[in-house]
Length: 209
Ligand code: PRP
Ligand code: URA
Image 1 (tube, rainbow, N blue to C red):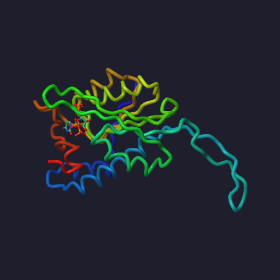
Image 2: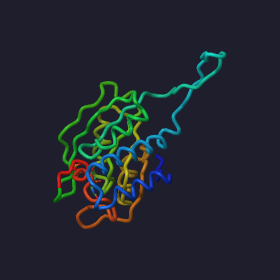
Image 3: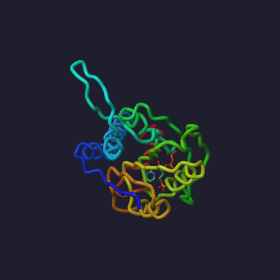
Image 4: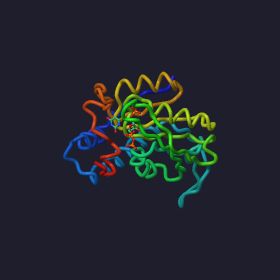
């Protein structure tokens, strides 16, 4: 069973509090989403494997540490997941970036796929899927299924706000995937929006409403 980790870090909680406010501008929203993703990347990479390497400092030889595990990739779910990529890359600059295009049909709330482009060696990488919102979970479940169909085995999911309904759907569909959550909210409303949430993440990042 994968981990479900809600971030307790005070800086993450403080920034999410500002993101949620309805008066926060798109510029500030984008900057804060990126910063939260950066802090979350720090927490979500705590368990990466290290190996010993022999190096020489200007003073002496020593045994230092180096990342030993798989190389990484960041795969945002378009559109809103794009807002988390820069922050992730600040922490993991060598990661490659893939894209999965999905939108949620406003009537059925079911995800509709429109794009998928991944690094050629994605199957060999530790893949971090990003999307600020985990609501019904339909988009995350579909995106991760697409990755698995393409041979990706090691997947982590990172979101800024999750509803309990989405966490349940994702853990049931993909029990092998670790889930990193900035804040776990109360419930979904009748339109599938997270309550209290932050509204429509894509619209707020890109200023489209
Ligand atoms: C939002 C959000 C997630 C999805 C979450 O995307 O960014 O991808 O909804 O909802 P779910 O868990 O119920 O699937 P949206 O469909 O609004 O597309 P956008 O990012 O292009 O605005
Ligand atoms: N997508 C969003 O952007 N916000 C929600 O609250 C739910 C889905």
